[in-house]
Image (tube, rainbow, N blue to C red; front, side, top):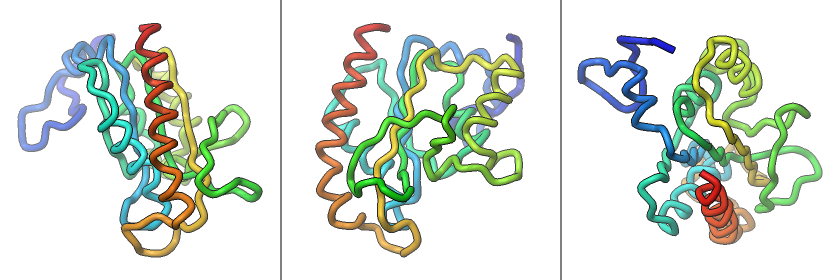
Length: 186
């Protein structure tokens, strides 16, 4: 795919980098995206888990980033990587707070930061990935989506609820082991 002049990745205030160059930099790497807003209680659980995971793993093939948006913003962050793990808050009835769930978007399970609203950049993850495939963008060959069962995604607080906060170190350990397994297969 040939795309030039596209603004991809973190390049604030600089000349746009050709997409192909960005994609080349991402080849052979895995990205872990912590999703959410750390100013809204449990909504920041994915970001906090990603930060803890990053502290546990030091490997040049691992990229850990934070994102507070879904849809096409999420797709832009994923393109070109060999593998990706998304970590976000997951709030539905019957889920245990602080529990880690592997989500399946084909069954309609989407994390909170990527749940669908109608404008293009905020569309749901499944629709955004479908559009990216239609556009023939180089998506990761392996994409795993994890949700952390949460209670409070409405109140302003930099702290997660106690059950979620207590669970984050174990969640980071579990996901760090998953990343190691994926990197062995890369």
